[in-house]
Image (cartoon, rainbow, N blue to C red):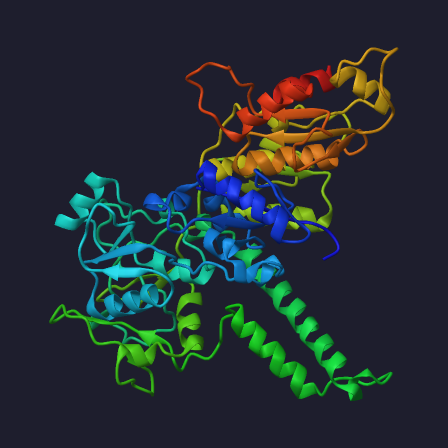
Length: 542
């Protein structure tokens, strides 16, 4: 590898973390441990045997599952296995979608019960019919019953069945918050994860009811698809190169691989990364009879399997089942069935937005995100709620018709926090950085005197204490907006000249000892200047 691969961890004890840092440093070449989840990090290490699956509830893991498909999640034991020492870290096995999870199944129809049990047991988890206080998740179609009451009492997440299907599609456990079962859903008939059901028009058959989760908010599915497309293309290219190197006939100038070889390899890779299939002949369907109120057995159109296990033995069929989009179906006994597309998130639904200083591609992507969460885009000169400016733009904004002027960072925070906060952070507004030299920057930020300023070199800076979108946004500002004066370092060591933190430690005995506090203590010991980010910006902008 030409450059270092950065890895981080979550949910590890101090002892486990120290062991991990030592092993990574001594046993894995070109691999560096980072305490923070920066954009350079490509591997997240968890301990799947840790008490109560702390890693599953950590903000790092939830952020990776939702927004970072490029990050590989590996178990600590896999890293520490001596048989793996010296290997490329990307060759190590990833955790499975339901790794070490105990999932209780309650009030599911027989056909769905068998499917979900098989999915969980075959992908690292354990599906059980009972509930104990060490259960991780309860899956149910209705928010009622003794197990539901006990789960709520014990703080065990109760989710709808589509959490299982979406988790399998993502490849990691998704945040259960987005699939929490509600008790106030009545008279809603919704289709399961399977489309193109050829039910008769009328009242003879109904699709079984259950509440769907907020799939659109649980994961950035578009980013996941883009990454998988690129990854399958990358692996196909590697495969072709390996064939060229191993086959002398292919190394002749102008020679190419046979078309059928490359197409076959490409198809295999695309199936490996979970692409959907358009063939509807093998779609599993579940129907409910209104006369007997009983669920029909699962059947395969044109080809009926001997058992549910045999029906799901085909990976392609299972992937097609999981990739089907959800749709709401309302059927009137006197009218034709009318499909109603399930509404997407409405976090931005009450607001209008105007976008400025973006490229056509950037504008298109941002418009899609805002519209996806209910916001309205305006192009004319009429008043709007938010004028959204590219965070890289560095000129004064003249505006008299918008209530708020923000950058795309504000939109990210609104969506991540699931609310529109009008007191958004300072860095979510356009930052107009004065034009000054590196020497002036060092004097202003490091408070070096004019006579003793060390050099004209960039200030080596590390950030710490930020989580979620805050971390990625601060890193982008430091690495890109301030690149003329700052050299960003993902690792804090003695060579750093500045440590930027979310908040300064109080040094009280009762204060929790976090990574940020440890770094601040080391900064004090090494003579490195420490600033909270708001003070850093104020010094920069004043």
